[in-house]
Structures are given as structure tokens and as C-alpha cells.
Length: 312
Image 1 (cartoon, one colour):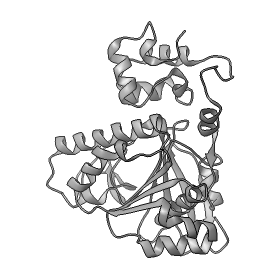
Image 2 (image 1 turned 90 degrees about the horizontal axis):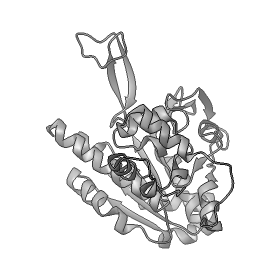
Image 3 (image 1 turned 180 degrees about the vertical axis):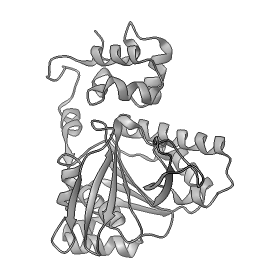
């Protein structure tokens, strides 16, 4: 049986198209997701998603068509300097996946994103850093690399592409052109404060907002799945009102308020995304919580951090 989704003989063409749009190219790409998660992500019947999952299962071992480099890059996991983050991610962030880091002002979201940037620069890979809210700067990046590693400090100017994008049209133009901006050495994209351009356009129609988020979803899926690009976004938190049954509420019906990432999850392909929330308890301590991941759609327990020590 062909491992190519488009050559699978039993899948309807509409299902094949939905899989491709979500970033799936081969049946092996489905190994870390469940039938329920796939059905929800693609909007297909559970029977179709189950048949896809069943078809993707086979005895472990590389096929002759898989190169050694692809096997290494697929299995590589990136461990940062913060133990609590690594624990929340099950040991590290898999390459070619997406990590959303959310938290209140003053949490170490940007510091964590730059720590991942250091990892790629030290591996001689290019990093694209997009800042939408002046949350970092070239001086901050330079200081980070000088403090952590002298070789990274020497390389960062050649390997880091840093850009300010403050408006929603600018952000969407970048997203539109992203696939053409990925070079052979491009390993990481960092999008700081990805929610800010949307918040600066509060009058945007709901249908337009949904279409823009779907565009980001599609590009992120393709960039991560086809180009092995690792993507990190940071986001502020906002208060969401929920009814007693857990459905979205308002000031009249809401039974409780919870903190959630401002942009929601619509822009993230669920099969390739990890969502972390930083919950500070003091200036240097707090918890990192996995909100969702490809293997744990409902998240997991919190992991405590202490920034007064090296790592967390």
C-alpha cells in the first residue's frame, strides 16, 4: 500500500484534500494523532478518521524511500534551558512542530522563545524573528547570545533575520510569503505577540477574522510538515467567561472566568501544535502548564519552575 495520502485507494478525494490542507503528506504523519482528534481537526466522520489511522499503522522501521537525514530530523527533540518546559513537552519540542507560549506580562515568554533561537543558531541554522509589539530588540537578542554562548554571539548576525511587523495587513503579507522565505538553512520562526495585530483591529468582522486565522493555520501546517520548520509564537492571556456547562458565556450568563490565550486555537494545526501557558506565582517562581498537544488534546498537569536557579 502506498504511504502517500493522495495515492491511498480507499480515501474519498474530499478527505484527501482535507488532509493535505492540514499539512499531512504521508500516512506516517498521522502516527501521533488519534481518530477523535483527526475527526475534529478535519471536520470528517469518525469512521473516515478511524480508517485513516488504521491504514497508517504498520510495524516500526524506516522505508527504503526515507533518507537518513529525514529520519534524524523527524525524531529530533529540542530541549531548552528550562526543565519545567521540557517536562511539560515530554522531554522537548519535536522539530517541525509549533509551540505557542502564552502568559501574562512579565512572564518569561520572550526569554523562552530566544532560548530556542539560541539552540538553532548554535546548530548553524537560520532563525526568523518577527516582533509585533516591541517585546524584544536586536540589542536584547545580541545580549542573550553573548551571555549564553560566545560562538552563538558570533553567528547571530548572519543567522538571525529580525523584523518589526505592527499591523495586521503586514502580518498577513508575511504569512502569505512565508513559504517562499524558507531557505535550506531556515530552522525556526519566532512570532512574538502574534495576537497583537488582531487586537489592534477590534472592528474586524468575525468572518474576516476566521478567514485570516484559517490562512495562518494552512501556512503553518505546510511550513512545519513540508519544510520541517519549527514555529514558536508568543501570546498574552485574556479573560474568557464560561457558562456552568463549559460553553462560552457573557457577563449575564457566565458562571466563571478563566484565563486563556488571546488568539484562541483556530490558527494552530492541532496535529502539530503544543500550547503552553506560563502561570507566575511570584517574580521568579510559578508553573508551566501544557494546555494541549498532538498526543494530549486536553493538556496535562503543571510543572513548577524557579527562575532563581539555572533553568526552571
